[in-house]
Length: 320
Image (cartoon, rainbow, N blue to C red; front, side, top):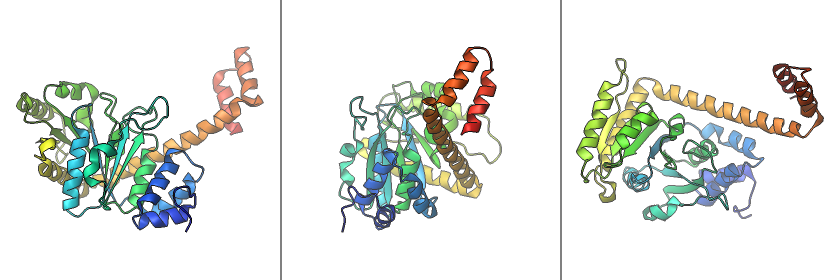
């Protein structure tokens, strides 16, 4: 059989991924990251398998213990017999463009577990803590039969709210002594978090951080029946509080299902994804026109004052 490492046979790769072949999953995500021309075919092949996995976003400032917490969550999820996928978004190397940190190194406990797939992805300069390829990579893991997909963001601090548009449930980690409770207000994280985890809760100041979060949540305006963010204490390095964290995530999942919010969030996520693909296609077509006569002629007319930029833009769009 032809090696899957270089294959671009999408039906073959999807079939093997559905059977749990990690090489096929790796190849599909590589094609996603590279923006391969086979992406539309891949999306069609995976469409019927989408929407079956539970997507949990994990975010927080650098140093709060996201990778350690993710590692422990995988352990508990596997104990509960869930097949788990992890997308760990890392900063990109300025030289190779690849992921610098390689979270797989920090999750070696699960390296030989066939029920776990861990992939480090470079953000390639994309802001918001994710990679532009993350939504399609999530679809690949859904297609590969993962019950739960954990998306760990790059840890860029105050800009890291994009994960909320991708995940069913967003978990925000904070640590005492880092001013994270104040940063949460400044970054708007209170609005995106469904579950807060005060990690490293054995440190001085953990109780104060916990109280600050509870106080800020209590001040928030919410309607009857609206979800109230949960706050959990944990020491992930000692596997303490991880079961309680997952229980809080489960309560949010139950609330999503009971209030029809899961369908609403997923519809909004699909709308964002479709819009991003459409804008990307439009941008590539505009780039192609940039080197042609159409754009340069319109630009010359605008520069000379013979035409306004809005009508020129309308003409350019008509040319598309």
